Length: 323
Ligand SMILES: Nc1ncnc2c1ncn2[C@@H]1O[C@H](COP(=O)(O)OP(=O)(O)OP(=O)(O)O)[C@@H](O)[C@H]1O
Ligand SMILES: [Mg+2]
Image 1 (cartoon, rainbow, N blue to C red):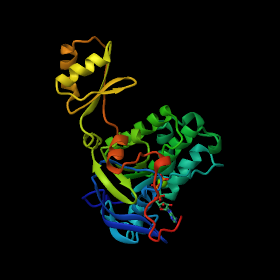
Image 2: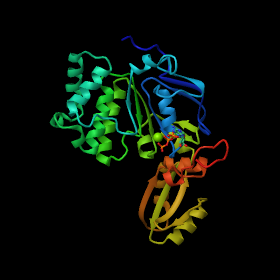
Image 3: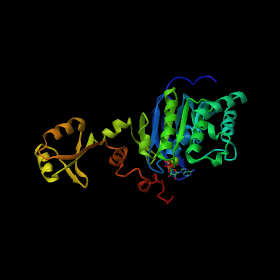
Image 4: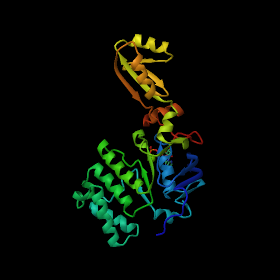
């Protein structure tokens, strides 16, 4: 198989998707570089899976265009499918097959020879720490092992781009860390990753993040740049006498806010300001911490709502009917 043409890994222009009366995507313009780890972050119903499905050629857009690895997602689906790996939000493993056979089957599905499928499967079993359970029926794996196997399956045919939709849903912290370590290896080897998540900690591992809400991209940048939209950092100071400390801080031109844990100061340059404050403050400090603004803070600032499911809002309904 020839390598894909040069140019961006993903490029979309004015993508729209409508399901009956629901407008799930409202004009998505996006460009993802080769070798980039790109995250789509947004609340439930924001349109993540819809965009993911269009880019991975499983769903046709209602309007607009999209290219993946230089190929059109509607007219050149086969070209894209040969070069991509995919992990779905819903599990897609053959439960009755062994772990090893799941990998081999996927290799054959992608058109590898028996021999190549066997070889790739052994490499991945080793790499993903699944050698000890290679003979086990897939349905008897732990949740973390199943997700790792899904990742393995998506990488059997050595894809150029990986699509991951909420790929670590339900995993504990350790299993997630392992999962992302594997994905990072793939990126270090030159692969491109397009992932969706509604966990902000996961999005932070990406090179760039698009925040999506109601079918529109509301911000797109590096995690650091997005966080800076909120402005610098948050300094927390617990002192022997917070009232006196607050009065002194106000004299210095700061605007401290009292909280249960101490005084909070939003500041553009906490790394410089905090040591200076600690050196000069007339009250003994018991604890000092600096917090980065989180992506949750950014989303809140831009939309007035959190990323949490409970606050998620369905996208615009064209006719105002209940969904
Ligand atoms: N097949 C479908 N038919 C009708 N409406 C759909 C269909 N699939 C999705 N939708 C609607 O389109 C909107 C976007 O859904 P989508 O699955 O893309 O969201 P999401 O961001 O992936 O959400 P989640 O975080 O819950 O996975 C939602 O309002 C959803 O109800
Ligand atoms: Mg989804």
